[in-house]
Image (cartoon, rainbow, N blue to C red):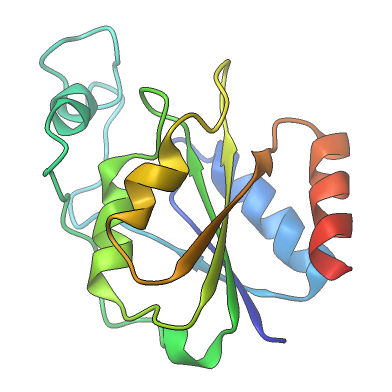
Length: 154
């Protein structure tokens, strides 16, 4: 089974987890990159007018991503990671799911978070793809990552 660890990382935390995960399971990695990178001001969730706040308020928001640099057809399973924003996945993850054809693929979501769980992300992301989406887990500690990797390679 060919596995891809795809992820969006705004501050580098999720990227670090994704790289460790891919190394442990021998998977390829793919970073979901916005055309317009996020600044610290964009990520200020306490500012009601920050870019991230406005995107998350508008469920139809689809931040533009850099495309054409991945062939998802060669993967059977995608481990899709992101930081939790407003109790779900950032809308840029929906952009990724709507940009590529994931028909017949299994997507297992995982996330990093300062305090909340996966929330409603599975249902929110399912609206953007025909792939089968399964809940994974929150991966904030090395032990959580180890347990997730064990479940994946079984």
